[in-house]
Image 1 (tube, helix red, strand yellow):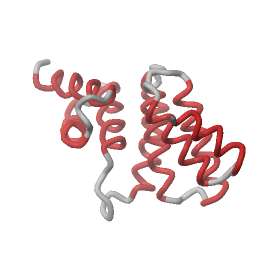
Image 2 (tube, rainbow, N blue to C red; image 1 turned 90 degrees about the vertical axis):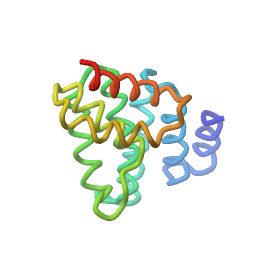
Image 3 (tube, rainbow, N blue to C red; image 1 turned 135 degrees about the vertical axis):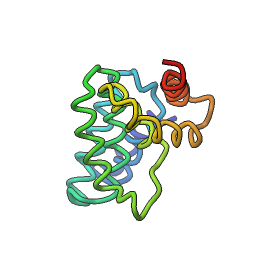
Amino acid sequence: SASSAVEQARATAPASLSLAAALEAQARACVLTHPEALALAHEAVEIRERLQGFSDRDLAAPLALGALALLEADDPAAALALINRSRQLARPSEHPPTAIFSAALGLTVLALGRADEAREPLERAHAQLAPASELATRVAKAHASLNNP
């Protein structure tokens, strides 16, 4: 399980990229409404910043996960700050946006009342996410709300 992978990485490779990846996997695996998701994503960001620097592209995913957790904590302004940093690091002109990033961006700008900006990332996330996931359900509901205000 993701939890045991984190514990194993903590024991064998503390403050390593392996631990950061395990933390990200656990944040992704736990229901994003779980308060622990933000702490997991934050710890992964701290480790990656320490080991890879503040401008490494690998920071984009845990930042987007943190933004999703902040949305659940009803803090879309803080979520947007993480999304903007994630967007700069991901270099979308070179790499297509991930489903997690697209979902985080779409849900964040929608929560801020910017429905026009939410449509494209929500459509992209809706097409990319596995249909049975909790995040896909949230994206589908948000996307449907744009079509049926």
